[in-house]
Amino acid sequence: QVKLVESGGGLVQPGGSLRLSCEGSGFHFSRFTMRWFRQVPGKERTLVASMLLINGRREYSGSVKGRFTISRDNVKNMVYLQMNNLNVEDTAVYYCNAVYGSLSYWGQGTQVTVSS
Image (cartoon, rainbow, N blue to C red; front, side, top):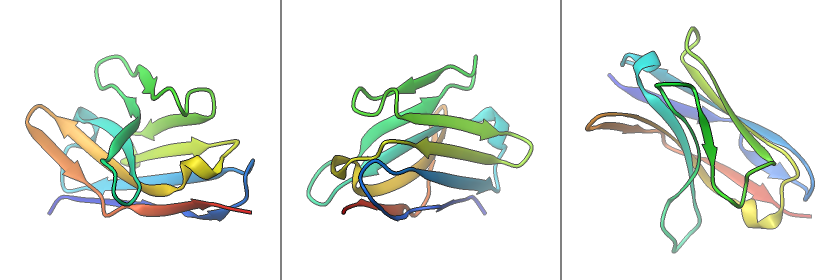
């Protein structure tokens, strides 16, 4: 059974940091490109960060570049999103995504709320 389980969300003040984690199971984790998306109510899910399979290259959306860092541990089947200098616009549900060809798996999401 394929599973992606996110954790690490919560409430943080503006300027603070959080580290999201996502554990994969039931599929060949190291073959998949791993990505983080986020979604706010009433809006589409948007790509935040990705770590490409082929060369480990990291890509970020413009709004988080320089503040967020994606990383992965293929031994532990984990992908992380380190989020620094958070602001209220980062408030969203964050989703982990694994993609390989036509295969795409999603986690259930974890809520991140940035508020004073």
